[in-house]
Length: 249
Length: 249
Image (cartoon, rainbow over all chains, first blue to last red; front, side):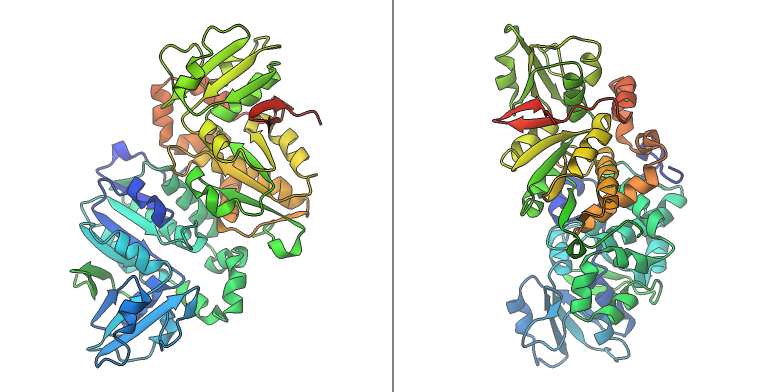
């Protein structure tokens, strides 16, 4: 395949891990991990930083997030099965943050898949957050790094997920084109195949993805359209001492 | 995507599971499981039946297979990491069976990935063996079944594997075109994307797949070319009481 190159010809590797459960099989020698949950956790995180939030604390359990409800300066956000958890004002919808002034605020967030993946990879040398919203800014930063990069898809309840994998393919293409990164894993090549098949219309992905039915039930189509629109932000969230902050390039 | 249909419009589902470790997440409601290990276990099994073998007993351990070495009427085959295990005359090469008269013989086989996947799914209502060698015969049989079908890729050491997934996409396209099967899983749609990207040249898949380097090291290119050549056999191996036999249509 054009654009597919062999690792041993290039200084660094970029690989794709399709689901959190496979992370231990792919984590070795990976210095930078990009956590991806296009629908919707990592899109919401980028949107929050685009709207000025100070920091986001990803937590695994609803109980941890609940302690911050109503606390001054904090926004408690919890999503399970695509819906806002009872008692919370925020879930994982990026549109909930758009147009707000979040300066000085801290979001404490727990989601079905995304925050789980962040927690899994929290010991990586560098952990950053990816979504279509920051595709170009993230890719431009990644391409300058002197390290191996793992694109970690959050998936859906430990299963393979189409939109995360297509986004990983989009990032991968930009890194392969730089000539500084090669691939070794079949999963990485497959992600590029998927991106090439879907590149001209990201929305066709979800039209194809049966989970779209779930999304329609939850009336999330405006959210989905927003999450699949590239380059709405230059924010790159990075994990520092267990908290996501906006990277200062 | 053209050809991608939603499960709830169709009587039966056909889904793809990318790796054995994910099988429990996909097995529910699946009556027929197709085990796929294109390079090379399931290709070797089809080749053996094409050359007249009576039955194949898939075993999990080298020790089980070793007990059959030199026993009258038995062929003991063992592969690990792509190589014939020491002390065995056969591994998982289909070409080892081509041109032989295997009538009246029983093969006892253990491989790195394929026989493991068979063992995992042995309790399915029906378990059959798929490879490019029997693509059309298998698809023509599957399309007539009144049951949900799971295409189970053996993968490579529990990781995603490109050639198995592309083959699954090839089978899936034929089942979707029948109008009797729909899909629900993102993995199934992704397999079809991959097949559409690779359909015109199966060998380009392996040119792209870095594992090709391993294959070259093992000097398996004639094997690979054979395994990627569709429709060399009408044999459909099916598991009956723990033994694979040639299905009598």
